[in-house]
Length: 349
Ligand SMILES: [Zn+2]
Image 1 (tube, rainbow, N blue to C red):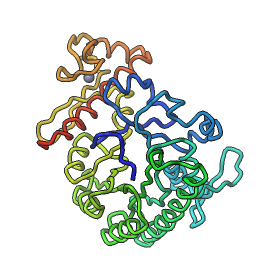
Image 2: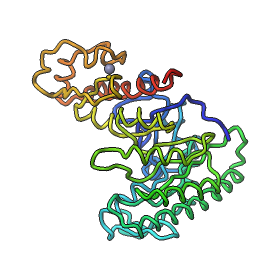
Image 3: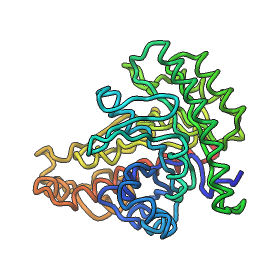
Image 4: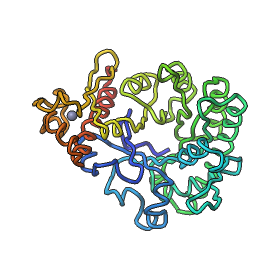
């Protein structure tokens, strides 16, 4: 297995279409972001897989040398189908869906893997079958069985692509599979053990493991313990600062979450507070009380925004809806996340 050229734990913002909205790659590096997650289906649509293959992948497109993880492409299609069955269906063969012209298409585990090779990711994720939180036990079982079946096909396609593209051992990407099973621990354990028997470089924590009180911490620990410690542990879609602090304590090492960037664009800015496991503290910058506030968002923060600009200026930029508002706010919220992962990397933790 090629080790990741990065320190852990790591937080990866969402660069769906090859960009973290409003930031360029220098902004990312300056706020300590060492990797991103890109969206396979969006990139396949534009600029297209043929173009990405021709230029040497999405890193060339972005001018980014950090870690790139691609999603399997399943999330988007499943979300569409979970909202309305008329949009498609899921079978063991793959995901059937309608595109803009209403023609039926199929997206298979093999399509997912070959697309991710074209994108040129460092970590490829197997297509898995995930269920909405209200699913019954029959559907949960089906999801686990299909996830295992698709993981086998993904692994076989991964090996075919390595041969076809004549990749050397040092340029091999890593392949992760995703552990499903909802809140059912037996199913989670079965899913993990069968995926481990197939053999992957890392394992993801899949599905919605969230209750009305937030992340199910005990289940998160249970699933982390199912994964051997010499494999990477990816807590997909997690989480708040507090979630990440907890999950890292259970051994989860890789995190991706759209919260900080989305919150930034909505003027919800974070205060970094390492006391009592990172309680959520926010500055809602659009509130009128900040119109004449001459202090930075967070005076403990070393980001470009906090070092150079006041809350008053941020408030003004949001009020006039200038693009700079989104950039400066995103830089700050991302720095909060990278400060956390830097803190968690310290051996004293
Ligand atoms: Zn800041």
